[in-house]
Structures are given as structure tokens and as C-alpha cells.
Image 1 (cartoon, one colour):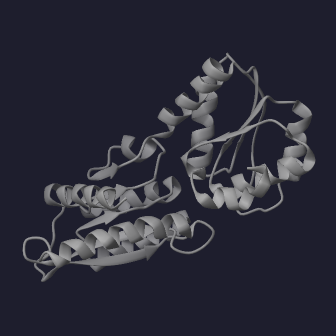
Image 2 (tube, rainbow, N blue to C red):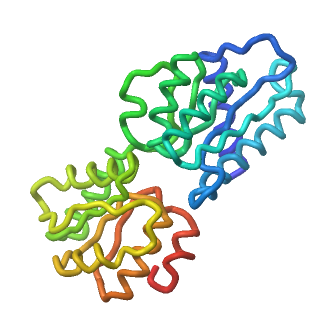
Image 3 (cartoon, helix red, strand yellow):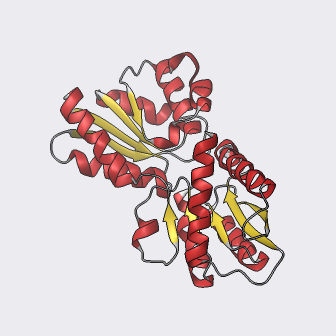
Length: 265
């Protein structure tokens, strides 16, 4: 993990060298933006801590070009409007570059602000293709895209599992619905989609939609969303007797998912 953090930080510094434009100062300011509070704070804090570790190491070696690195932290609370506010704050603070945002729904509107201001950004977790396809200069990501993982998931369902009936659920966010749509698109006409619909991110009771899905008798339930809702859905599915296995994307790769789902995971 330590090596990964350092490699990531090197990528950031390289990007800043090419695209960034820092005013004369004794320090180099780098922004970190993501969900630092709320139910997705673990994701934000994880990459914040990784970047902070890398900054500490670089500063112990004398910094960059003889200047110390200073971190400016922004909490977007995985809310698009708050992300734009954070982006404007970062620009006003004079950051040379930004690591963030985490959620696609935040990175996409935030990137417009950074691009107009000439501030490069690298997202550690935004997978929606639109982020890098809309042509903004200095916008990067260090993760896969929804159209990649959606296709891989669909290929596994049709090629390895050879299933014929699938339910697709998403959390109505840019990330969750985007991933679900790419998965559904990649399935094509090889599989019958017996249910397609969304839940509200932040809700805690999904037994209504799960009961509807149960009545459709799917062989698998695919969920586009984050670990919090995914864990609750898996746990509640077991409680109502929905036995179809669950599949999801990178948004559920977190120990919290197991903790929330409990024995149903």
C-alpha cells in the first residue's frame, strides 16, 4: 500500500509539472477532495490518509524543487453541489493540483471548475466515462471505467455463469446508475432483464423493492451503488428469502460491506 501511495503521488506531481501553474510561493499546495464525512467517509479518508503519507515522506526529503508541500482538504460529502463549492474553494486557495473527487457525481461538475481555472485533477475513484470524455483539459483518473467493469461483469454472467434471468438495481447516482446501465447494455439480448429500477441512496429499508424482485425469480441481482446500500440490501434479501446471488462493482469493495451485510455476506 505504501508503494502504491508513492506511485500515485508521483503521478500527481508529474501531472502538476505538465499542466499546473503555481504562483510564486514558499509552498506547493495540493488539494484533496472527497467524502470526508457522512456514510461514505471511509472512502474519502482512505485516500486522504494515503496522500498525507506521501506528502509527509516528500517533505521529509526536502519537498519538491526546494518547496514544502501543503495539503488543502475539501469535504464534498458526496454531494454534487457541495463538490462545486469545494472546487471553487480549492481554486481560490491557489492549489497547484487536486487529488479527487471520489464520486463520479462530484468529479464531473467539479472538473468543469478546475479545467476553467487551469488546475489539473486526478480522481482516484470516479469511474463514469463522461468524466474524461467531455474533453476538459487536465482531467485524469487512476481507476477503470464503468463501461469496462460493466462488460466484464456481463461477460461473467453470460459466459461463466450462463444465467438467463437477471435483476438490475441502482442507487440513482451518476456512478451507480451509470454502472448498472453499462452492465445492462453489455448483457444485450443474451439475458432477460426481469427487473430494472432504482433505490434512493441514504435509505435504509429496501424490503419493498427486494420483495418485488423476489417475485420476478431472477437468477442474479446486480447492484450499481456503494457498499452501504449494498450491504443493507444483501442482509434484507436474506431476511425475506430472496436467494439469488448478488453482484456489484468497485463501489462495494470495502470491509464495511461485510460488516453491514453481516451473516448474509
